[in-house]
Length: 216
Ligand SMILES: O=C(O)c1ccccc1NCC(=O)[C@H](O)[C@H](O)COP(=O)(O)O
Image (cartoon, rainbow, N blue to C red; front, side, top):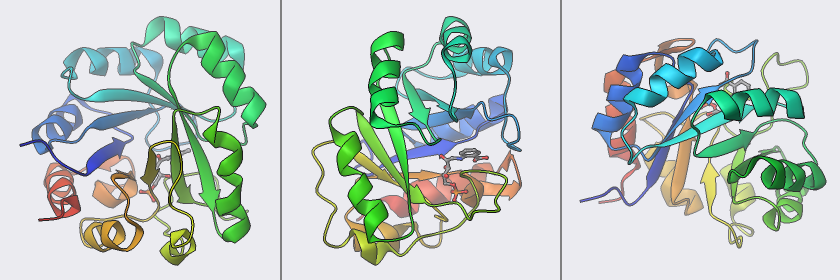
């Protein structure tokens, strides 16, 4: 039976991570191309990991405010199924990237307050999916992957968008079930919550996370 709640495991770096993601039944895996991330992979590493990825697991390439030259190089070298835009890309830039590179787009919107939730509206028409993440603190080095949750109550009035959406931010095997129940999310995304150290994925934690995300 396929999992009813789709899980994305973000920031895989090793063949063993790909195996763990597939064995657990996660729907997506993410390759992180942000150079300062402890989860960074080169195009060559991502291409090699892609070869090991079963067809039922979608490969997502995460970039932050990437220019066209970078995106051209990336999409030439790595066989991706989605691009995840994790920077301050405008709706116009999202539409441009989608048209130019021919891949479905997951646009990330960082949330800390109700106004941030309202910003999602401007991406609905141009993105294929929305990833609702915790907004990174101003002094954070990373725009995501910080293990911080936002107030899920902010989604209470506004969780019905026209496009599929994922919940992210500080999710762990211990809180993901509560997060799904409270927000009604049908898709969840995690990076640091399934790691034994920054950038080192833990196969048991991935397994537990996917299992706990499912509502019996
Ligand atoms: O994970 C990173 O290092 C990262 C770096 C730069 C931009 C985004 C990054 N991660 C994005 C993700 O999709 C994470 O899964 C999401 O932000 C949630 O992270 P976490 O709270 O650690 O589960």
